[in-house]
Image (cartoon, rainbow, N blue to C red):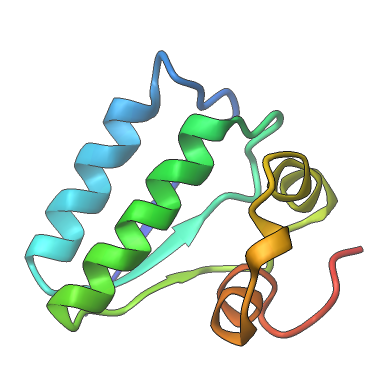
Length: 103
């Protein structure tokens, strides 16, 4: 069974706990988890850190976590401004961009 979690448009440090709880619950069940970040208007560091932490947890637990769509330009910009893309390897590129360059 696949669980799709849709992030709120205005996810921020003040609201990221709801998204974190949904991710924890889905990953704990061992569900195939798809995270939809397409509606997020202004991604911040809290969101990026949460997604990265969830990725590492999924890897440790042998569960499947992926973005439902490649990161768009706004999310790609946030990743770059936060320094995440500077250390990206092939797996990071596949996770965030599905192997394609952001538009």
